[in-house]
Image (cartoon, rainbow, N blue to C red; front, side, top):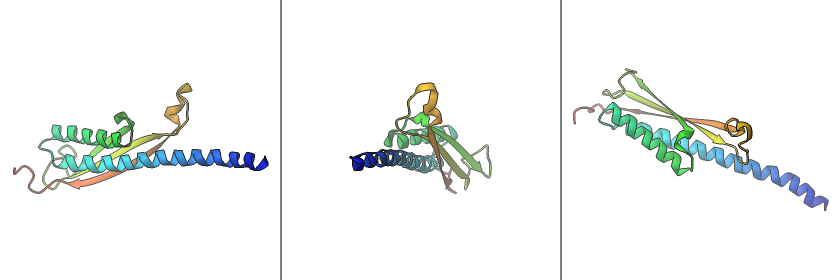
Length: 135
């Protein structure tokens, strides 16, 4: 009887830890994939409006692969050397995606689900082609 009790006391937290870490790892993979794809499609777009729309779609698609809603991510696009004009020849576009991974089995009481989460972040950088605009 003592063996079963001690086993349960050790097993339940271990299983919870494994499930929580799996969720966090999934969010990390989703953020990395979303950042990578968003940066790729951004630098290949024809104009800024198309670039933003395609990057948003790429992020939503990458998050959906891991079962996360598209509003679970915050996306930031930084550009250099001209911060106001991302799509310039040989410009550098950096996309940063932050995803909140909720911890399992946390009830929605008193808005605990929002606070009981782990934020993960991934970034990707791509360069605009030197032939951009010459299409």
